[in-house]
Image 1: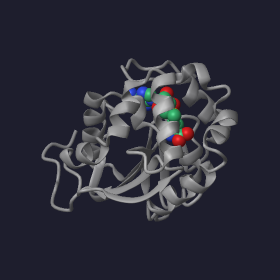
Image 2: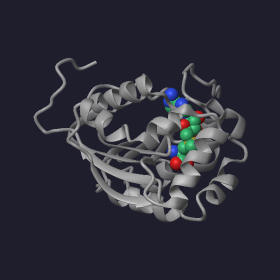
Image 3: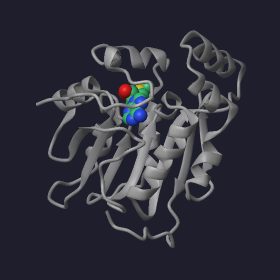
Image 4: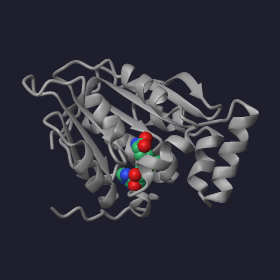
Length: 226
Ligand SMILES: C[S@@+](CC[C@H](N)C(=O)[O-])C[C@H]1O[C@@H](n2cnc3c(N)ncnc32)[C@H](O)[C@@H]1O
């Protein structure tokens, strides 16, 4: 199977795929499981749901979601990432009858309009610049069914001194202006401008990672089915 990365201006992590699962819990000060579990709880999953994990990396969250789905009821969690090596690792470690992965860019999703019950994204949006953030949320909006939930957990305006230090150090040490956008607080407006209901800021972790909950309004049908 060929897991060729797709072109994107986002910061992909092919180079880190082999060590990501080992490093991530350290970077998250051991809070990763707790945060991921809460993210999944907010999806309000039903066994028959089709759920998209955007910028899934090695598929940890996708796998958590898939555990709540039933293949007999056509439930499926699908993770996408632009980095081929991330998806290769995800397939090897986590693919199952309710969990699949695909190499794809968030700003150009290879899925039909209104084909998912909900969408989730964790620690992804600080990897893409503002114009791609807008496109990626527009794509999430397009593929969601009316009423479909959107759960995003990502870097946002720091609320504590520790959060401020981690967020600003990451922005400058990693030379990542996309992080700068997040910590200036662009996400809620970009989400709303894509057509979603004004996002609720549910919780902040480690002082700089915020959990947002929103949904596609019931009355927003897509005109053209692709
Ligand atoms: C920090 S990782 C987060 C992975 C996972 N969601 C998690 O919580 O551990 C960010 C991921 O975004 C991916 N990425 C960057 N630009 C992308 C794009 N335009 N479309 C899809 N994925 C992208 C990277 O390859 C990387 O795997």
